[in-house]
Every structure is written in C-alpha cells, then in structure tokens.
Length: 208
Image 1 (cartoon, rainbow, N blue to C red):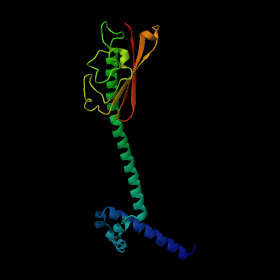
Image 2 (cartoon, one colour; image 1 turned 90 degrees about the vertical axis):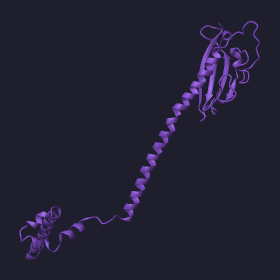
Image 3 (cartoon, one colour; image 1 turned 45 degrees about the vertical axis):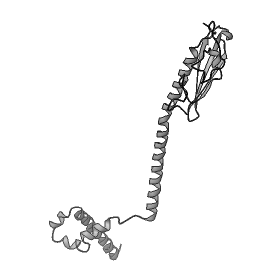
Image 4 (cartoon, rainbow, N blue to C red; image 1 turned 60 degrees about the vertical axis):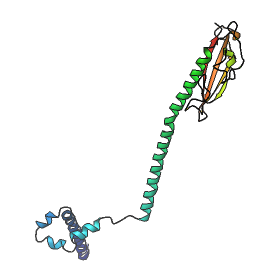
C-alpha cells in the first residue's frame, strides 16, 4: 500500500468516525454543549439540523403507494367478506328453529287425530285449511295436506313472520315393530323455509 492509499483510507476512517459522533450528538444535542472545543469544528461542516433532516425519509415512491393501496384493499375486502358470511350465517339458526317448530306443531296435530273414525262421525275427506278446524278428521285425511304460509288451526291468514314458510304432510301405511301396515302409518311433515331449505320430520301413529 503506497502512501496515497494509506492517507485516503485514513481520511475515510476519520469521516466515518466524524459521522458516528455526529449521530450521537443528533440523538442527544445536550452533549454538544459539553463537547471538547476540538470536536465542535469537526461537526461544523455538517450542522446537526441539516444532518438530522438528511437522515429522515422525505416521502414514498409511487410503487410503494400503489402496493400500500392494494394491500389495504385486499385486507378490507377480506374483513368485509368475513363479516358478510358471519351476518348471513347468524340468521340461519333462527330460520331453522322456526321451520322446525312449525313442523313439530303440525306433526303433533296429525298424531292427535283418531286412527279409526269414531262411531257416528262424519268424514269430509282431505283436510284443507278451510275445514281444518271446523270438521272432524282422522289421521289418513291429512295426506297431501299443504299450506302456503304457516297458519294456526283455525287461522284464515298466515302467522305474522311465517308467511314465507310452506308446509306439507304425507301419510303412508307402514309396518311398525310387528304391527301390520294397515294398522300403522308413517306421518312425514315437510316445512320449506324462505331460503328454500327443507326440514322433514317423521312420526308414527298406530290403531289404538
């Protein structure tokens, strides 16, 4: 290494040390007040205020801005999607419970009817909403019974809030634990909710 290179490297080390000291004084300006008089001239070529400003980022590039917008947009879209799914799914249990309650109520009504007509009873045939409460019925007469909307037994308009639920009943002869098909029936009640989902429940009625 010749003398010129040695001097050049020495100057580099001096400059690095000067910048290191300057950084220290930038972080704690009070130290500069108590600094040795020989140090202050070394810091004079680059005032602390100017050096501090030079070390701060003055803005962002267009690419960084675009990337930031894209990332934030994707994150917001993901959050909104999760909220939408959560809000949509939160209503499902209520709708299902309402449909199930309507099905259970109608199934119980059918099961409580006589299996064999009572002596002297007059049968009017298939059950409709119009004769549901006013006429005498047996279990088999509920076969093909259907309503658009859920009604009370003697209702003329659907129950408020259940107008978009539909119900239907199927009664079929079916053997049950050794009981012949003619003496046992399977009752299937199907309720369709406003979203088009169906809930079907079954019950059995025997001749007793």
